[in-house]
Amino acid sequence: MSTTIRVRRMKSEDITLIHEGLAPHDVSKPVEYIEHCWQENVENKRLTLLAFHENEFAGWGHIVYTSHYPYFAENHIPEIQNLDVISTLRKRGIGNVLMEALEAEVFATFDTIGIGFGLYASYGTAQRLYTKRGYIPDGRGLMYDNKPVVPGSQVRVDDELTLYLTKSR
Image (cartoon, rainbow, N blue to C red; front, side, top):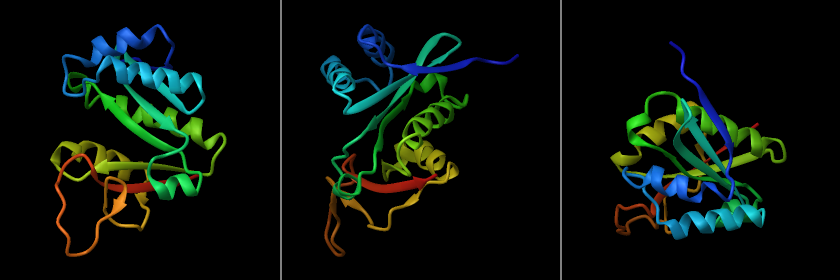
């Protein structure tokens, strides 16, 4: 039996759908954040795509056209952010289909796309997905809060400790 995965752009009426869809899972987001994402879509600062599995909201992902990561911003590299697939729907190819759609949007205009991820086990699935899709480290090493980690220094292992990768078409 085949399953259907569908991806489409976010609409204003999706705010409640997203909030209620993510809320009971490990990827929940405050409604204010979702509203902020919608506003940035309206302003063409961000593109948000929603994934549906068998017509059920399954996750979302974003392209931010001006990254907070200085290297991406200075080099006009759009960044994929917050790729979230609802935990009960993982391992069904949803993240891969969503990544494919996000990449297609970026590569229609840009030559390179960027992405960052955390370095602890919760990011393991994402780390594997991105490397399988051809993303490679940008060569600038570890970042903490978008600033280089200085050799010999100590940093907290949390969501701000990241490694950034890029992929070119």
